[in-house]
Image 1: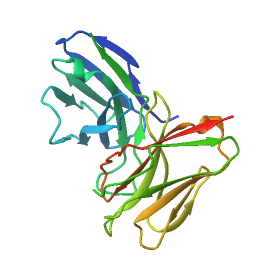
Image 2: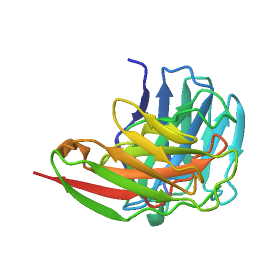
Image 3: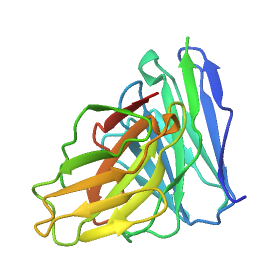
Length: 115
Length: 108
């Protein structure tokens, strides 16, 4: 089945130690998104890629970076994780940008714990 | 993006119909109304989308009055597995702006 895959499902890192979360998709969608969801809060969009074009949200901290080496894969890099970065990180995809009807397909998320 | 207001939580019992109303008083002409469902420790999942009147699929129905200032998601005959957070989103582009959502708890 076509899907959005996130690895690992759980990630533990140390304060200040860089960490990378990965997302892959078999849907061949051209838009990929990263969301941060803290406990009991709604998902918050960090940034997205439309093909190779990176689009950052205005309030996304510089500590968060992303890479998309090809259509299928997208990575979230946290350069110096702080305790406040502990959260569920959700990857999502959609077919095209700019169409309100397009559904976003979410992965299961990676829960990040910062010690 | 239009701001949405939904109840924080709702309780129901198995077999009942659950109706969640979302207010979006400043909805724009081009905005669509979309609902997502999120189970604990999972990513959100698209449920239904509409622009006006009524939309029905195998999971839910969406009722939108003529003025479009509110919408109601209807879940028929809920089961325990429908316990989740339900998000109402309003917008006219690809970005999703999630509000607080409604936590629906279904009891036996």
